[in-house]
Length: 149
Image 1 (cartoon, rainbow, N blue to C red):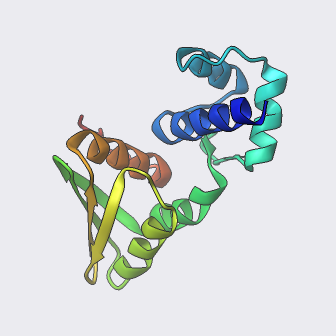
Image 2 (image 1 turned 45 degrees about the vertical axis):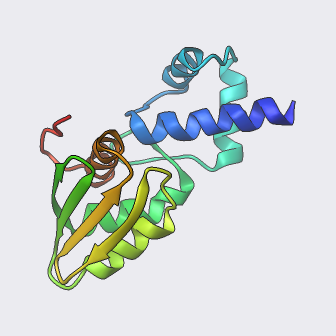
C-alpha cells in the first residue's frame, strides 16, 4: 500500500510540475494516464500529505517549489532556452539567490546552475528536460510569454 501511494505521489509530483493543474478532477484524470485509477478523495489526501498549494493564478504547486515560485514571480524577467541550456534573465543583483532556489528545489531534470549578476544559466540533462524546466519557470513566474517546445 505504501509503495502504491509513494508511486502515485511521485506521479503527482511530475504531473504538477509539468502541467497547469487547476482542480483535483484534472489531477485524477492525469493520474489515469499514468496508470493510477484513484478517487478524488484519495487525491485530496495526497494533496494534503504532500503540502500542495494553489498559486493565485489557480494552479497547484509543490510545497518544495514555493520558495522558487516566490523568487521567480518577483525577480525573473525572461526565460530563454536552447536544447538543454536554459537562460534566466532577472532583476540586477538577484541571480545568485534565484540560482540557489533552483538548486534547493532539487528538480530531477536539472544538473546545476551558474549565476552572474542578472543572468542564470541552468543546465538540464536533455533538451526535453530543458523544455520542461523552461515551462516550469514560466508557470511559476506567471510569465506572459509563449513557451516554445
